[in-house]
Image 1 (tube, rainbow, N blue to C red):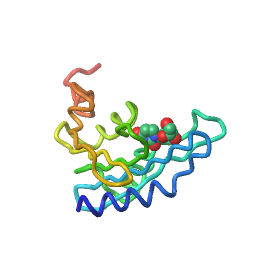
Image 2: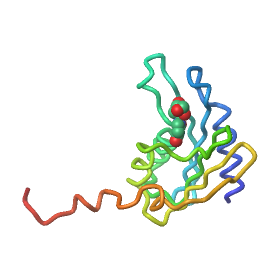
Image 3: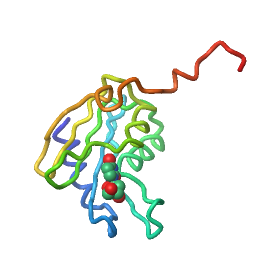
Length: 135
Ligand code: THU
């Protein structure tokens, strides 16, 4: 399954629209149902309006009716590890937990596997909103 996710992420990375940064990223979410959902980064001439690959993949997942992430692959080029940006760690957190594996890949394949808890310790998630207070 991981190999399949990596291949999908490579395809997604190749479709990225990144004319400004020239940094293409692909991401794949595996849903709890086993479905695979890919996304790429899509930049914009108004720079802050760009969208990360992880956000695109999460949109595809939600559109398919899935609401749990079981596993994540992120792929980008360069020597450094392309870990999800801070905002995307939180986006993944909405549908995942501390134990969810995040596989960080280069075009050649897997470089490092981390858990979401390692990437986003002591995170705030949907459960934090469950209080008995009337507010
Ligand atoms: N990017 C992603 O798509 N995901 C990440 O986790 C890191 C950064 C994109 C955003 C922007 O289009 C380009 O990479 C350079 O930052």
